[in-house]
Image (tube, rainbow, N blue to C red):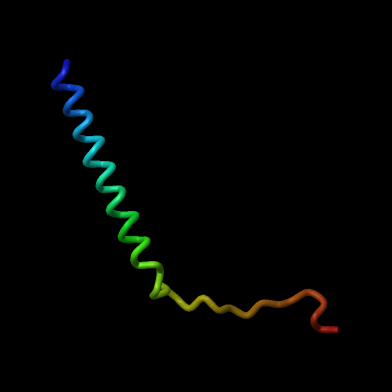
Amino acid sequence: MALRLRKAGLIAGVAAVGLAALLGWAWADGGEQPLRPVSEPVTIPGASR
């Protein structure tokens, strides 16, 4: 019983560290390089008057 709880805690700990590492990497990257150009032409209602 105790071994099962210890194993579950270890798996949860490894998953938490992995998630923290992934979020830290994404935060540090900050989206500096966009995957595609972000600008697009937009029609503004009422601007053609």
